[in-house]
Structures are given as C-alpha cells and as structure tokens.
Amino acid sequence: MNERTQVGIIGAGPAGLMLSLLLAREGIDSIVLESRSREEIESTIRAGVLEQGTVDLMTVMGLGERMRREGVVHHGIELRFGGAGHRIDFADLAGGRSITLYPQHEVIKDCVAARLEQGGTILFNVRHVQLDDISTGQPLIRCVHQDKQVELRCDFIAGCDGFHGVSRSSLPETGLRVFSRSYPFGWLGILMQAPPSTSELIYAYSERGFALVSTRSPELQRLYIQCDPTDDIANWPDALILDELQARLATSHGWELRVGPVVQKGILAMRSFVVEPMQYGRFFLAGDAAHIVPPTGAKGLNLAVADVRHLARALVRFYQHNQSDLLEAYSTTCLKRVWRAEHFSWWMTSMLHRFPDDDAFQQRMQRAQLDYTVNSRAAATSLAENYVGLPFDW
Ligand code: RFL
Ligand code: PHB
Image 1: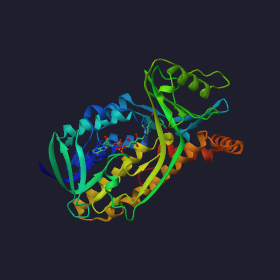
Image 2: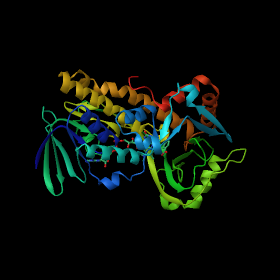
Image 3: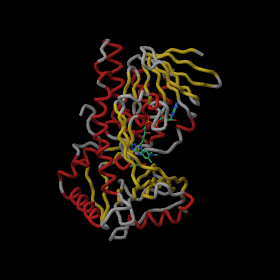
Image 4: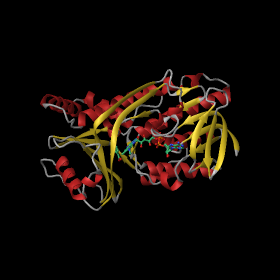
C-alpha cells in the first residue's frame, strides 16, 4: 500500500496525537502510526499533572470538556519533611496559575476520539516501522499494518514515539550530542482503591526515602515510594508498601493515610536524558523521543505538548507563508524549555530523595534547601512558577 501525507507522525502518545490535532486545525494533513492497540494506549497509567499551559491548550482545541468535569484543579502542593507539612501556594506565588490532575490516559482517549471524529487516520498495531530518505525533501516511513507493507511518503516526519521508539536511532550520529544521567533509585508506584488522603499532592522527604501522594479519582489514589530501581516488585507485598508509605509520610500530629486494596503496582527507573539537536532535515523529534526527565517535577507530558506546539506553529508557517525559519529554529526553541525542565526535575529529585552514598553533610544540605524553599518567598516562588509551568513563549 502506497500512501502520501504532508506530515507522517510516529507514535500516538500525547505528542503525536496533539500534533495531528494542531495541524488539522490549520488544514495540514497527517497520518499517525502507533505500534500498540487503541485499548492499550487508552489504559496505560502514566502522568497525572497537567500544567496550566497544557490545560489551556486542550480547552482552546475543544478537548477540555471532560477534563473540566473530571479533572481536579490544584492551587498548591505540600512539601513534607521533619514531621511537618509546608504548603507551596500557587495561587499566591504563581500569578494565579494552577495545575490540573487529569490522567494521561484520559488525555489520550480525548485526543484519539477527537482525531477519529474529524476523519483523521491513526493506524494502530503497526510493526517494523523504518525511516528512509530522511536526507531528502520527501522522506519515507515504511511499516507493516494488518500484514500489509505500507510505504508512507511525507513532506515531513515527526518522531513522537517515546524514549524506546525507533525515531531517535534513525538520526545520523554525526553531529548528535547526548546528555544523560541515571539515578541510583527508582519509584515503586501503586494505584490504591481508597478515597484521597489529601486534597493536594504531598512530596515527602524522609530518612527512609522519598514518598509522593497523588490521586486519580475520588475512589483511586496514586502513590509512589523511592526504591532500588533493580528491585523485583515481587519483594513488595502490599502490606509492606503501605507500611513504608505510612512511615515516610508520618507527621508529629499523627497524619493518616487512607488505605484500601492495591489494584496495580510496578517499579520504574529514573533518568534525565536529552539529545541535541532535535531535528535533521525534514525529520523532527518531539517529546520523550528527544528528552526524558525524572517524574518528580511532573514535566514530561507537558514538555511533549510544548514541543509539538512549536512544531505545529513552524509547519503552519511553512505551508501558509512558505517560510522555513521557525522549522530551522525548532530544536533551539524547544531546548530552552527542555533544559529548564531538566534542571527543575533534577533539582526536585536531588532535594527530595535519599542517595545511597550520601553522607551526613549531604543530608544537611538537603534539609537546608528544603527549609529555604518553604521559608523564603523568593525560593517558594521559583518552585511554584516552574511547577505550574512557564508561559509558552517564555
Ligand atoms: P509516549 O507517551 O511514550 O508515546 C509514544 C507512543 O509511541 C508509540 N511507539 C511507537 N509507535 C510506532 N512505532 C514505533 N516503533 C513505536 N515505538 C513506540 C508508543 O506505543 C506510544 O504510544 O511519548 P510522548 O508522546 O512524548 O509523551 C511523553 C509522556 O508520556 C511522558 O513524558 C509522561 O508520561 C511523563 N510523566 C509525567 N509527565 C507530566 O507532564 N506530568 C506528570 O505528572 C507525569 N507523571 C510521568 C509521570 C511518567 C511516568 N512514568 C511511567 C515514566 C508519572 C510516571 C510514573
Ligand atoms: C502522578 O499523579 O502520577 C504524579 C504526580 C506528580 C508527579 C509525578 C506523578 O510529580
């Protein structure tokens, strides 16, 4: 099967789907190729926190109806350490900007439904995706769909296939720079059937390691604890996870975690990663395909969305005004925000986790940083404005 499209998009995550929707608004056609099934992408549990800018974009694009109904707006977070909680008040510190808790797979459902309703093409379950002719003006994507070979000739290709996709490795190695850092800990994440224990997220620093309390719905909590990234989840019976959460979250006034059945659990590794530049000829990387942050800053999905906003704007300018300046500047433009988020995510991670080889000096440094962050208006403002997200044209 031979097909043609203006923009071939690899990956139906937040980056790929949002790009196809942004382009469709301006009359630019695209085809999205996704290696998993629709059911799978619509049920994978990942992000929870949407920045103000992501929420605003979804609203402008007509994708905000369910998010407004089912999502929950938060005006602050709690940093908990030394047995006490300290609120970072976004309403006061971040110019009224806030965050919304709305799960990533719900964003995916809304985007897939909207794109299919427009008559757009998303090919699910594609296999053997391969890129060709990327140095030319008409790059090509080959793949297998429903046992048929597909050749998709494009004006441009967007690699939105996440950290483990094929896109990044299709870039020629010469001229590429990779920056990365892995952390000596991971997160053990659970979904627990219990009403929220708190109205705002709690980021806890304790001698036993980091813990995070988040929610997914009025009946479901999302919780994480720092753990050994190579540990086997089989070593963590539910009761042990709950004991560890209680211990790390304990306060001097006897705070209690509401508990219930654990319905899902798993361990994820943490890393920081950036590839530069994020483009080659008519081939562009966006989202996790180009950069990864540890989830402590809740930035990954939001960065993916910011990338494709820039890419869509650049493609619109190319098609409508025959100008390629924004396309040429794409990587530089995105990397400014990417590195800001890399720093913020690394900073939050370093401040809140226990590092295995930290000595007493290092631990005092962390406490000094935490104390300063919650007691200095300037420091708290810095956390708040990064957490809710810098403006798009920052
Ligand atoms: P995705 O979401 O990984 O989507 C890539 C898609 O490409 C498909 N794919 C392929 N398709 C075709 N051919 C191939 N060869 C392919 N290989 C892969 C995949 O099946 C997939 O559907 O990348 P994208 O769009 O760049 O989006 C990035 C975000 O998903 C990610 O950054 C966030 O989940 C990160 N993240 C968070 N981000 C936030 O902004 N706020 C949060 O609160 C937040 N919490 C989190 C997170 C990530 C987490 N984990 C699991 C790493 C919490 C966690 C626990
Ligand atoms: C989540 O709800 O899954 C979540 C919230 C905040 C983070 C990371 C993940 O920093």
